[in-house]
Image (cartoon, rainbow, N blue to C red):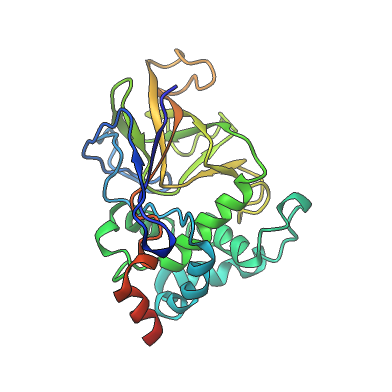
Length: 281
């Protein structure tokens, strides 16, 4: 199967090599699971080129050191409310296999899954590429949620998960797409509150099963997919009852993992202006 890997940059300012296979660039605006879009609104699937897709490959340690300086600046509004709400949830003891998961990682998971800042955060992630490092409002949460997913993923294999929406999505077989935000999916096929207009069966290899760490515990058996993971549309199934695992869905996209695109990888650590800004904060 074709896989797409595009990781630009890295620690120390070196430009990254890029291997691209079968890339389809389309204009796309993705609606989050928990928002209430107008019914039957149509959206085109794509790679979401304006997404904040930093995966911090090669610079996690350096970013963790400077990222704390963002906290005071960004600790306002829905993020402040969500972070405070997540304090008690984050006191859970991590499972033995997840010993690398810190309290900050767990608080990021709890804050995100509380849904208090979900819509604002994911909209910013989908569209914030050009303001990343400046007026983007969620550097702190983005880093810790990304590295939380990666920490959990280290002890997991690829997963088959499901995602339901209330909107109409279009795309073509063999298109390469991304969700372009932190996309919630589930092992469960019977979650009805997110809609059944367009659904997805997803093979994710970068996503992570969140276990009982979310604000709601294990109720939704959530697998969280990062913005940088790419997928190949291998099949599109039309009609209720035509796809047995999701019989209530009108349309189902079958997605297979196709690698990653991280155009912003370690971008901030490669910019002298950003490093100077951090020294002055």
